[in-house]
Length: 184
Image (cartoon, rainbow, N blue to C red; front, side, top):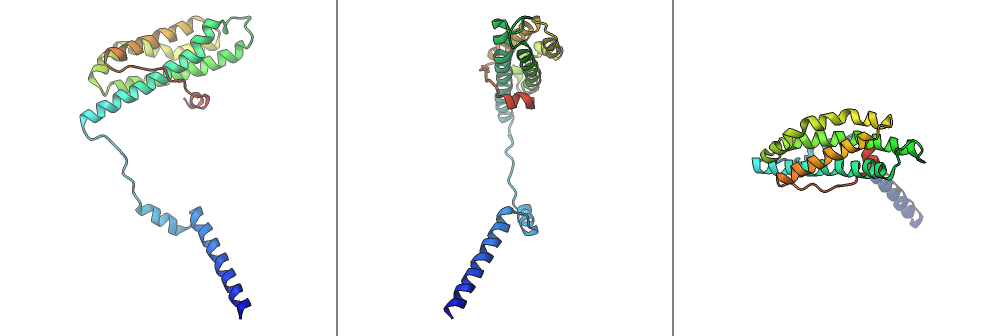
């Protein structure tokens, strides 16, 4: 009898482990049915003041990421002479600068959309719309080796930071990671 009890206990333990593995993987229909009943409310602002606060925060983050990318991968190499024709690693620097330029353009467009949610930011950033739109062609100019494009990026970033500061939203430069640059 003791051998049959041990065999039964072993079989029960193996079945329990198998069942736990199936439940943990979540591949069964029962798991999908249970998950359908679990709802998590998404946080969303409900008052205009909350919308404005979120608009200011999103503006600061997007403009900060654009500023960090431009400073790290465009302005610093430009000042170091990495874009000149005889510079070692010129092609790599130009490719990084082009990628950073595209990233900065998209982040500045997002920051401009975010600024529309706050009256003071909207008034401060609205005059900069043509400058931000002009950045669309600069990554291509950087790829071709036009060094004046780096100065244009720097000037627009300074204008956006000044506009944010005048509206009471200081912008700190945040250097994005390389995977963030690749995602845009």
